[in-house]
Every structure is written in structure tokens, then in C-alpha cells.
Length: 162
Image (cartoon, rainbow, N blue to C red):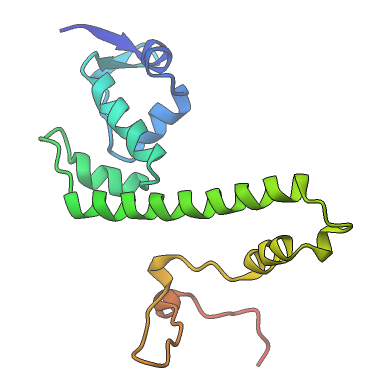
């Protein structure tokens, strides 16, 4: 079984040693021991780090990745969670593509002023629309009332004078 210290694991994974320590603290990876003050990892840690990096790039939280990886057991990936994340990425791509197209148009627009360009005005209006995450939106029948479900978990404002 080949081993490497944290500096080698950081170099080979492209991650900072502090990131590896954080992932170990969060239970995503485990060192096999120490050599002096340095953590020692098995070479098998590299594929696990690659999965963590992929999950982070896809926008998964460390907790979500931890649930998928489990603790040294087989990989457990919730396929519905992957589909939901892929849909979210698609939506982000659409928003960014529309923004890119609007900016490119603004760069070459022949209107005397950008404020006279209907397309630029639409871009400005879109920039002012609130962007709530799917987690904070709850649609209620015909009223479409916005609800923040985490409000019950918030601490009361103790700074307010009574």
C-alpha cells in the first residue's frame, strides 16, 4: 500500500493542504496516520478527492458531497439529486447566455445612447428582478405568495429595543 504525506496529496490533487485538512475535519477523507506533524494518506485518496472536486465544481455543498460519499463505503449518489443539480446548471447557463448576448449587443449597439436601446433597457429590467433560489420559493395556489421556509429557524433579533 503506497502512502503519501499531505504535501504530496495536495500537489497531486491540485488542492491546498488546508483544503485537505478541512475535508478531513468534515469527514470527507481520512488520513491513515501521521509522520511527525504531517498527515499521511493512502494513494487511494486521489479518486475520492477527484469526486469531491467534481461535486464542488457542480455546486454541491460539502455536506451534500459527504452524504454521497459516505464513510469509506461504496459511493451512494442520489440520481434525483444529480438531475436536480443538472437542471439548476442548465438554468444558470441560460441566464448567463442571455446576459452575454445582451452585453455583446450593448457593445455594438448603434443607438445614440444605451438608454435609448430597447434591448439594453430589457437587460436593465432583468437585472432588477429578484432572483430567489428554488429552496426559498414556495408557490401557493393562485396567489403565488413567496414564503421563506427557513424563517422559523432564524434567531430572534435581540438588538431590537422593546
